[in-house]
Length: 105
Image (cartoon, rainbow, N blue to C red; front, top):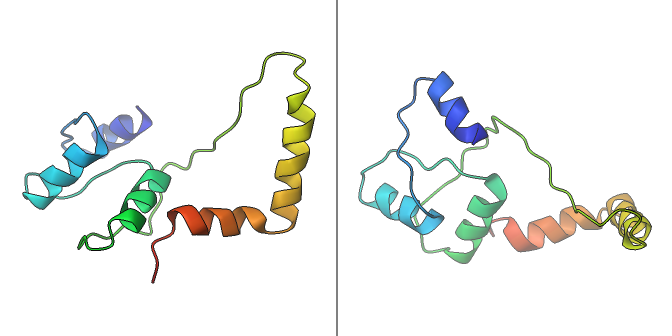
């Protein structure tokens, strides 16, 4: 994964796990010093586990985008692109992201 490559290049020892819950368990038991994972999933985890004494660094080292895949010549492609553009123009995208993954203050 890009994360594993980044950690190796930075001379950081990585311990692989099967899922985020396992990573958090290792962090709580002090087997590891940090969890490196996709930011949206970490934010979502923290939002849904408010009682956790965990924090996310503001640093982002490898920004990734997300997309949708459609069959060739799909009629959905135009409609989805148009809807996403409208959401972005009205700042609805940020509101939706904040609603689902930003940790409440």
